[in-house]
Length: 311
Ligand code: HSE
Image 1 (cartoon, helix red, strand yellow):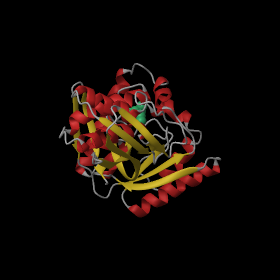
Image 2 (cartoon, rainbow, N blue to C red; image 1 turned 90 degrees about the horizontal axis):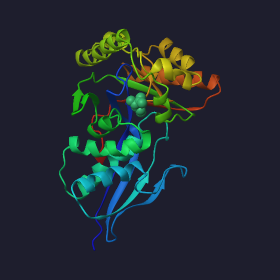
Image 3 (cartoon, protein in one colour; image 1 turned 135 degrees about the vertical axis):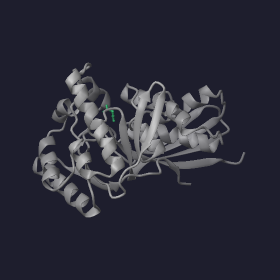
């Protein structure tokens, strides 16, 4: 039987984006997962090899986010096919950069292409979220949706799922620091309040709306003053030992904001030029190091393509 295979790239993502808890995210360039699927004559879905995970991720297809999303898709369309999977993890697990979502999205995106199913991204997202659920124990689409669709994404509603791509200024740059610690999304969700007071809900909605308006109007001042998060940051900042020092370093160096990326420990800042973005990220790294934390740093514009075929 002729081997049919496909390899895809699924980008890392910054979710929440300040006031957009569970509702906003954007894809970035350069970092992400790669995943290859090939048709096998043996029945069932198998993970043949995972690279770059330091032996941390499960090979059991019902436990790995990539295969859980694929199995959900195959079951939903009653497709019987043998598939072999290889995964290259190219970002840290528990980094706050959407690692589990990237694998889940890569899986369904690759299978859709390989089998010529022509399913919409909306449909693929549903199955990717089944994979995300296994990893983070909650349904949140603010990593999976931007990873799949690319660009800056708003999840206007979860039921039914309603994804809106938001325009953004082309000269919006993102500085990202990934301090060398791990935070599990499931744990970082447990520490959040179950209920939000009305005045907090109003303040958060004001900022979330302000951020979307600022992006569309290309109004950097409005973006900057909308980036305060009243829901997640007050609880989660304590999980990142040198949070305040990194944030201050970014702001002193001209960043428009500094917030937690997803559930952390990565943090991100916006700025308006590549030069500024490098200056900011270097200052963030220096602040982390001064406090005893090694880190990885990245500078990226928003990745408008999302997940794509690479071979
Ligand atoms: N919105 C999710 C959270 C993103 O903050 O828990 C996790 O990456």
